[in-house]
Image: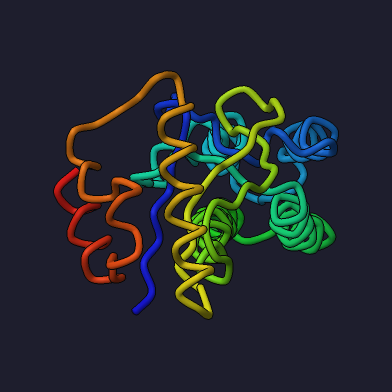
Length: 208
């Protein structure tokens, strides 16, 4: 049974789309905006496409619909950014397009980017299942592009001793985490660790 318990030391802030944190974002999207008038035979496509590019970051966060903070590893952010830039560069390599084609393609790339970001953020959390006990990984916060980190608890323990040590580490972390102590975690008190099962722990976390 795989279960992921993420312990995040901050509430989710309003994110700005993640991709804007990438080092090449400003340069790339500045180019895209300034050359949009060369991509369509129909003048009506130009303001529509320009608005899509200008609002790219803000629209991204509206579509992420995440229940966890928008924090992504540098490696995954770079992978998403490279995929988006490649699609955009290919689109801009073409000559002028027929009416409606260019903004529609921008919308398609935008939706693909949202899906890539969602997957990247969630996959980083799920990867915690491969660890036993408290695990921390470095991230970039999409809200302000600062270095951050996520602390989570993985259940991939191979022995009762590892499991006991993992639960004890979790208790220590909770007690040291801004003095946050919840009565619901009485079920994980150290005197009960020897007899604590995975099912008991899961039930305890559900009550918290």
